[in-house]
Image (cartoon, rainbow, N blue to C red; front, side, top):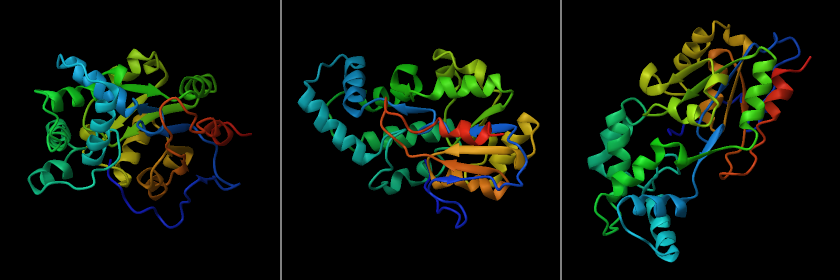
Length: 251
């Protein structure tokens, strides 16, 4: 995901609505690092190797995972270095599906694994529900917002369709709209992607709260939204998502 400078008036924690701010009618959620996290790196490598018909011992899998994370993983940390031949794909990765796949398979191919088809198998894990884990509070928070009549959109810088993932987890019925960068043609922190999400929901940006885990998500304040930035935690660990309810449902 692109890394951008955080607006000076947004904090690394919650940017609370002012006392005079109108009630929250919609919550916009980032996907990766906010609603769900990719699987643990070693399990990612083991699953991809199995798909290629190769059994790895856990020591080798751990070593490969470390090298692949340094190279750059979809849904993982940014690469230490992007080879010049991948620069254009990397720049467009959140705007076109072919660029997203090409960038991340290309990065994986910079690591000599000795396994045929491994880069594609690694990428395929990000496309299936088994390659992700919703955060512990995700379902409860979405259900509470739904009961309260608060609209929900997912706003994500991403190069593939995440709707099947949420459907597999039984969460798709709790999402009213999706503003995905590769469909919208805008990436966070561009205000346009937040405006598009609010338009899909029929809500004024000043009545919307953006929830994410990066400075790019905090860019929603430039679109007129309030913003809450949470820590990005490992799969299976709470990321404090319940704080959304304190802001969205306060009297």
